[in-house]
Image (cartoon, rainbow, N blue to C red; front, side):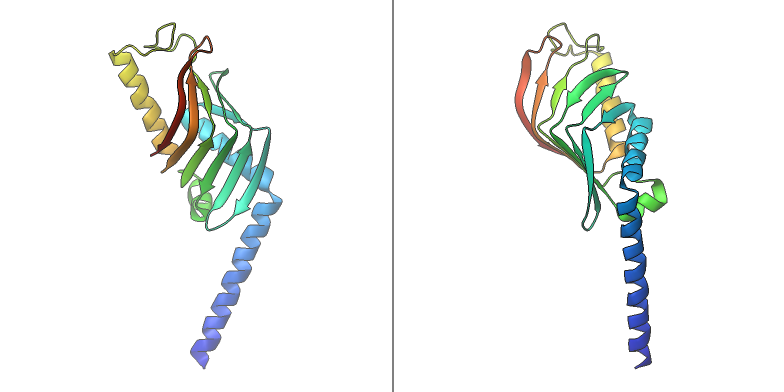
Length: 172
């Protein structure tokens, strides 16, 4: 009987703490979203500017950014219909939310920036050391931010707007 009381008391404390964490997250959702975006900017250099944002709480915290535009060094490099960042609840308190559990991009349209090292005027990469180094840097930056990446129906266009890839779906 005493064990049952301890179990019920422990469960009650857990429910109260979880409810408090949810209430704090819901109340400070704009601040929490800005925290995640600033951490991504600090880790990768990508500045993500959403038209709208919302939170959802499931087994993880899900931040949904609506119609975000992604900038690198002040130049727009991508537009996305929806970007979902899935954050482990424990990671929010221990590491400011990074690395993300997963990041998902719906219908991203990526433009190759003009003057990118190793890219010709028509966007086709030249197989040289600069391209390999740039790809390695990009993959390292992404791996610091997210454990899993899902890309759905991506399009890649060159600086002139010519499509290089029409539909690309990728899970890594």
